[in-house]
Amino acid sequence: MSANTTATQVLFDAPGPRGRRRILLLSVLSVLLILALIGAGLWQFQRNGQLAADKWIPYLRRDYLAFLGKGLAGTLEATAVAAVIAFPFGLVLALGRISRLRALSTVAAVWIEFFRGIPMLLVVYAFLLALPAYGVTFPRFWMLVIPMILVSSATTAEVFRAGIGAVDRGQNEASAAVGLTHGQTMRYVILPQAVRLVLPSLILALVSLLKDSTLGYVVSFNELQFQGKTMVSITRFLVQTYLVVSVIYIVLNFLLTKLAGLLDVRMHRRAAEGSGRR
Amino acid sequence: MIRFDHVGKTYPDGTTAVEDFSLTVDSHASVVLVGTSGSGKTTLMRMVNRMVDPTSGRVLIDDEDVAAMDPVKLRRRIGYVMQASGLLPHRTVAENVATVPHLEGVSRRRSRSRALALLEMVGLDHKLGDRYPSQLSGGQQQRVGVARALAADPNILLMDEPFGAVDPIVRAELQKELLRLQSELGKTILFVTHDIDEAFLLGEKVVILKPGGVVAQEGTPSQILADPADDFVETFVGSGRGKRALHLEEVDGRQVVVDESGRPTGVLHAAPESRS
Ligand SMILES: Nc1ncnc2c1ncn2[C@@H]1O[C@H](COP(=O)(O)OP(=O)(O)OP(=O)(O)O)[C@@H](O)[C@H]1O
Ligand SMILES: [Mg+2]
Image 1 (cartoon, each protein chain N blue to C red):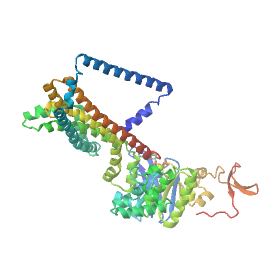
Image 2 (cartoon, chains in turn green, orange):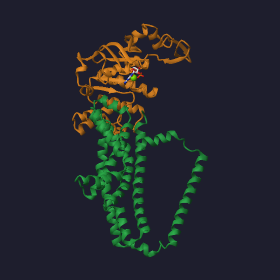
Image 3 (tube, rainbow over the protein chains, first blue to last red):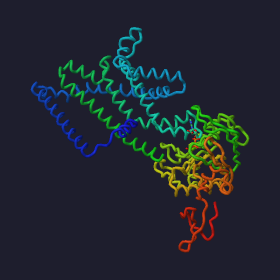
Image 4 (tube, chains in turn green, blue):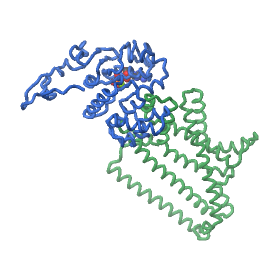
């Protein structure tokens, strides 16, 4: 988040030439270490015959791909639906949290703290085991997605709140001076700027939603990891399946993180420009 | 006409910013409040558009108590220019200027063309309308701030150290521009500054404030210069230190104006330029 980044920049000096050399050395060493580990792993797989072509070729077969593809679709759908509901809900929670109405802000605060603190697995179990005991049941998809929404909205509420707090205070005064109401100030001035500020953090929230969706296996929802698990139980290709599944996750998250980084740079430039001459 | 009637302000934390202040600003007049930092200038100015409510006394606009008016409506018919221009960084310059007309329901096209006209009026190329505030210089941003304050065509203009953050050359330019605007538009202007030169240049009437919003002296610039009420005013306007006790010396055949300590402060032209 932008506020954090600037704080980091303030707290830590930019490394000098010696510091940079040390960082370079450490980077090279860690890359070598990682390569060595991968090499060792591959060698181990090789010795156990895990690299044998017949164990990998199936992943080029259309039915295998379709099976995993279905999982991927499930993962993306769960993530997308959760995000589309959770993010606006998070914004509403944040607005409640900073509301001048004491009762509203307390309720929002308690709600946010509760779902931020509780492991998502427990929420999933609540929907899988506890609620059905009282006769409340949901389709598998929602047994996964509702907990994702509850947890993610609580986290993004805090992201939004930080963003709203990061908007220059002078903007409030300026808005009041030209005659905007409190609500108009929020709508036209504070929120547009806050959302810009937190956009990169929201993308990172998307990454964590994507990972959260792997809890779909608990409720047997056909997301990517669950499909992988099923595939393993059929083919017994444990290593290969999970490697393929991991690569898909990593590529997805890498792309999202990359996007967040790009946005961050752009927003920073904007924000810096915006407050440049005050 | 704006009338401060024995107003006082004690903030919730116990700070008394203004004790007991009275002043009348005639319609179409420009009055400058000048005083050291913390003397309550901003507090007084904000009482006019109800960004601050006085804890005692009243502020009247055309004999109507502002306390009885809706703050939002009141503010929309009063222009306010802040020290930091207070522009919205995510809106273009033209959108910034058109904020209030737009909210008042003026169509986008009409409020835009009015915004561009206002930009020209404050001396900015209308091409700047599509830029973002961050793409303007500090002086240009202040001009946009003035244009925005004029957008709703208010009768009253409140200006809180609007030129405090720009360099002396740009500042002088902006001051000249404001005098020109004032002679064209004839608004009622309440202007705040801590620069006595600016006060004397812009104010038909100048009010010198001591901490607590206490009026040290009130009058036209020449009255104050000719007859400072006390040591405080004397020090403040600089006449005590001889800064304004000037005399002429001849240098290279030109008349140079020199202050008491012998520092040259200007050149005398054959025909002295008239003010405004
Ligand atoms: N919101 C507030 N809460 C508490 N005290 C305040 C508040 N605003 C101003 N004050 C105090 O009131 C006094 C007058 O402040 P004010 O801003 O009116 O001064 P000013 O003359 O405008 O000063 P400056 O030239 O620095 O802008 C100061 O002592 C200030 O600390
Ligand atoms: Mg002030």
